[in-house]
Structures are given as C-alpha cells and as structure tokens.
Image 1 (spheres, rainbow, N blue to C red):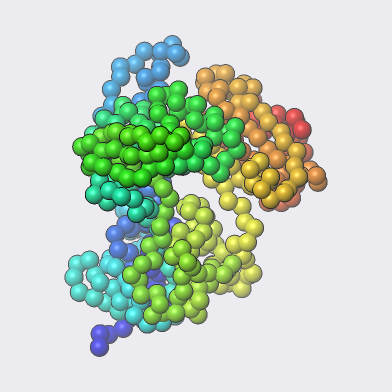
Image 2: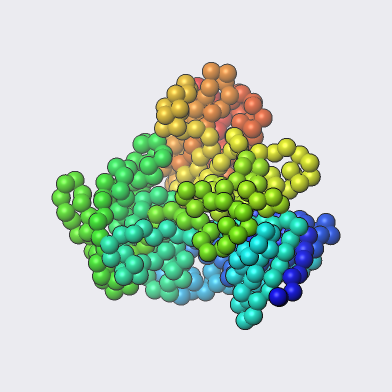
Length: 458
C-alpha cells in the first residue's frame, strides 16, 4: 500500500477560494498541500477574467483609434492579434509567478496533478510528471471550479467549437465569428472581436439578450452592439451544427417559424458553465452532489462529509471570482468560531462591454417576479457632465427604492459602471436610506456625480 502523507489541510484546486484558504492556513503555521491539475491560481488569472479583460481592453483601444477623428485626433490604424496575445501571455506568466511566490512564502506545498478521492478526506494524485501520491487531510477544501458547457447538440462536437479558452488563444482574427449564447461571456467577446475586425453574429434562444435583465437595459445593449455592426439574432432555436469551426461552420436554426442557416468561419459556444465534479471519486468520500452536478453544501459551505468544505463554482455559488473569494471568507470566519452564512449576501456583477453594465440587488424583473413593491428612479448617463467631455453619453442609471427609503437594487449601464457599485452596496449592506447617497458631496466632474442626481430624482 502506498504511503499516505498527512496534512492539516488538503486543498483540491488552486482557484480564488482554494488558494486564499491555503495561503491563510499556511500563514497561521498549518501544514497545507494544494493539488492543482493545470492552472496555477485557477482560471481567473490564466484563461478567464484577467486574460479576457486584457483582450477587451486591447479591443477598446483599437475602437478608440478607429473612432478618434470624432475627438479631433487622427491616429494610424492597425490591429495585430499576435501582439495582443503576446501581451496577454506575458501578463499571465507574471501572474503565475506571483502565485508561485505566494505559495512558497506561505509555506504551502503545491502538487501538480489530478486528484481523486479514494477514501474519506484521502486523495490520490496522478502526478503530471508521472507516478502517484496519496494525501490525507484533517480538513479538505474543494475548489475545482467549472468549465464551459457544451450542449448535446447534433453536430456540435464534430464542429470542434471554441470556448472562451480557445478564443482567447487565437493569433488571427476570425473572418466571421458565430456566437451561440447572448449572455455575459458571449456579449463581451462579440463586441471585442468585432472591434478587432471580425464579422460577428450572436444567436440567442430567448426573446432578448441578457434574459435576466430589464428589457430597457437589454434593448439598449442590443442597439449598442448592432450599431457597431454585430448581427443579433434572438428567438433562435438551433437544432444542429454543420461544418467545422476554423474553416466553415453553420448553425441550423428555427427563427420565427422559418428554418434558417447562419454561416460563419468560427463558432464560439457561450452557454454557461458545468461543474468539474465528474470523476473525482466524491462518492467514496461521502460527498454528495446536487441533481445538476454541483457539490451539495449547506449555507456554511459544508459538504455532506465531515471535515470537507466546497467553495466557488463547484459548490453552485454565483460564478464570479469575487463570490468565490467571499466563500473563502465565510469558511475562514466560521472556522474561527463565527456564524456566517451565504444566505442573503450581495451578488454584484459587471458585464465588461463598453459601456459597462453593472448591477447589485433587485432589478424590475426580479421585483415583479417576487411581488416586491418599489419606487423607480432613473437618470440618463448623458446628464452626467463628465460624459460630455469624453463623448461617452450612452446609457442610464436605475435604482429601486423600498417603502422605508432603503435601496432594493441598483443598475448602471454606462462608462465605468462597475466603479459605481461600492457606495450603493455600502448603503444597502448597512441599511441606510437613499438619502445617504443623495446628500453626499461628490467631486466634480466625475461619473459618480450621477449617483447624487439619480437619488435626487425620487
């Protein structure tokens, strides 16, 4: 029988929650081992959040150059995907090095390989360099993440479609990119790829883009993308795929009762995520899954196995890096004796189109579905004087106010929208009335002045 190495904690997966837990426990003198199959630091610094935002930023610069004459500037135009990718890869390499240094500084051991449970709190690791190791922890933390979903659609597998991972590694601009899915990932890439020179068509099954957002916001984003030359096709029920991505590919869809074929050179599938829980031997450790394949956890992120926690995407938490980090904080604080829960916490998010969409709390769709009474206040972005200096006048701010004058939810569609969330979140978190923001003295001319105007309109 192979020797078993014992630790105070075994962390399976080095994503946001896993690495934060490892660094925390290692910093307190615990003996900690982290098992990572491929991406040191998880998907965010390697293949998701930061690489995608690097690409989005480069595409935004290209768009600024292309439209610079409107601002009185004339700049030579040109886009090099190879140079964009080289910058991204340099950034990723630096982030990985930073993570490795942090693991070393905290005293955590990093083991590269695929881990699989063979018994309670016991994991066998097939090492990337060959051989195996068996690890056992007094405590085990799961942070194995999720991967892009590929539906069982006729011809899709044979078409070898791109996910965000492969798209972010292209060194050439697709001639015509088809995007299956009109939500956050799909729309960010739609605008970015269009701005670097690709024709883009977005196919969404629902009647509107961003089905969970208010129709005025979704409609404004649709108009934005269409104005940039992106084809938007909604109520598109794709039945099969033909051809091969990278050459010639086609979506065969029923649209408005008519069968249509949408042709392109590349296909990106952006239809959400699937948890990476298959093949981990969780049943041998007494760890149950939900019907949809996520690790079953309670509101303290405890699994059905004693001494085992799950955090991040694999636990069914909202699929954002900042929510995974909050998962870590909840588990950490509970280990210290506090009583923290995932129930009722804020879930802010930001869609990094240009302009951005950011939201926290209820929108009108949510409030009506839940039967929550509200007062609505709105303010056009064009009325924020800073936008007159930059020409970024598209969008609006919206807020829902309860009968007690507390803020129920806030939506911003406009430049730097994500940066407007924290002051509203603080007011919501502490139970302040909207007057607390309305009465602020905000520096002029800034985008944040719009918050004062918004809450003065009630």
